[in-house]
Image (cartoon, rainbow, N blue to C red; front, side):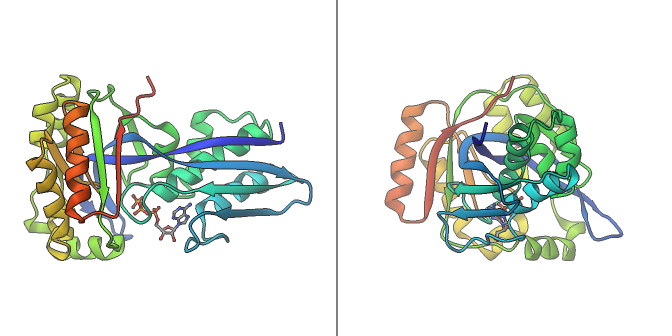
Length: 290
Ligand code: ATP
């Protein structure tokens, strides 16, 4: 095999709580992660000359060592002393800097691809152990599905699959700095309202979409929404058009909405398009690996 095609799937957070700040500045989190069927496409080809390079359809993305694709490929190539290199082509669809782990999932997909391309024989667990060196979300992107993430996001416990439902994903044309969001959170950490993550886990186990939606919460909304009220407007628009629940993912600004049926979700998608509030809009489904 000289070339492999892989999909890198995005995630949303059904619940996101920050439970503490460590001495090294990292945040302790409790998050419910869910993979969605919105993905980047990657092709990884072997090259004889030992170089690691990439190209992408998004011209503003780095294509050097700052890209997690390059970092991931080099991590395995160096560890295993592989003499050949790889040429990566990345077709980006996941909104960038949007709270959907776009970079992390590309890195995870490259670890998977390089492992297969060079027959390294690494298990999923082996890949996850290496993935954490690239970023806290990378192990989850390798694991996929519905999971509880704790620690700084790297301690994972699989959960039963989520209730199947259409999901609408909307990103406004604004950028959010994750660093700034966490700094603002730190400044008012004692006064924020924390979501009940254990209750959400019970709702997932009970397969109760309505209960789940009524308990969804993301502690970062409290700091991101005042900076970007459009996030709240998009949530409201989804709710006005039949969403059972709607929330911001990660540090934002992406908003997702859960719907009971496809017809309602499609109508909500049209309404959001007409509103002119969003730049990227996808109607998709939840990914379930079990
Ligand atoms: P998270 O949900 O983990 O906070 P995010 O969605 O906020 O992630 P990314 O889409 O991963 O953020 O992008 C954040 C930054 O990472 C980008 O501005 C970009 O410069 C850099 N980056 C490095 N590699 C990639 C990649 N493969 N795809 C997208 N961005 C990348």
